[in-house]
Length: 154
Length: 283
Image (cartoon, rainbow over the protein chains, first blue to last red):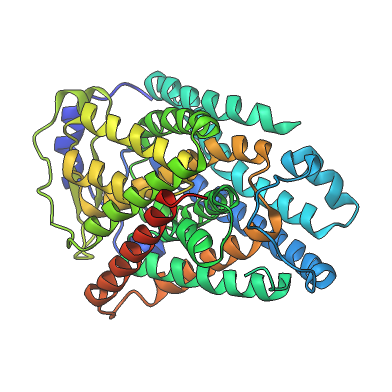
């Protein structure tokens, strides 16, 4: 993508032709040229991410309620979660043994990872378009996210 | 509340989160802010578990909403990414601070934030003047954008962004509060983007929503690692909040939001007082 003069862009965009119809249904955002495809891909990623996460949480929840529905509940005192429920790897270990709480936690991890993937996707898109300013900005955000998650992964 | 079974408790929490998500979507104020006080003040849950579940719920709800908004073309992806630098750094600070801040102080801060949100909620959104003259910093960062005009004629409205340093700082503060209290802190973000940076209402709400997911994901890793995220509690909170927001967004057309705004504001104020009371009494 060649460098555009921002002021020039601001002046030309309002008059540029834009697809007709309800933007909510046609899904054609009149973005500065090129951001169109990024917006569509991001929208799809977020949709499938949250859909997958809530499906896994629901399935895990059913297993959990069927097995533990009649147990007494106590969240009044904080004890913290057992070690396996504190990391994605541990949650997967419990889930693979068919534990409902493990599956719910796996779904939660999918929910957490979805916005991180969105940042990663934006980073690579800006990189490919040689938009170095925004490659740098998204790299800072992505770096922070990976740093914070590195501690929780194991 | 200790005599409840897991099934009864999950059902009640699901209903509460559903109502919170529904009201949040209907009033456009976000339901996340009420989840923590709902769990602590009504269900007697320890604030650390409440913060963990509320964060996950904020991620799920904002992601689901962003999937729709981004496609509709209102969200400013560049501005969102730029402001996420502020919110994620703020969130990192907040998650680190939360280890040393005592629970009583957390409850105190939450009470004050709730009171402030109640104050903001009773104000009707004032239409902001669109910033048309290009701000130098906005141009340099290529933050200006266009969004579809409301008349449905296919026209677009161009806007610029002003007061970027102040807005950026406020976003960092909102990230800090989000990580500290497990809320989306949408009301503070809207103040930053609407009133300070002069963004059009639809752009500010949708872009603010986009940043919530990443901000919450930043601290969620830390909280997961610290054992604050309980699957049994998070399951009804996340599913109820998501369902409530989806229903709320559908029935938005044709409802009297002024009346709901008042109700939401009252609920916030009541929970603020209860949380503040809990923060000051010993034990």
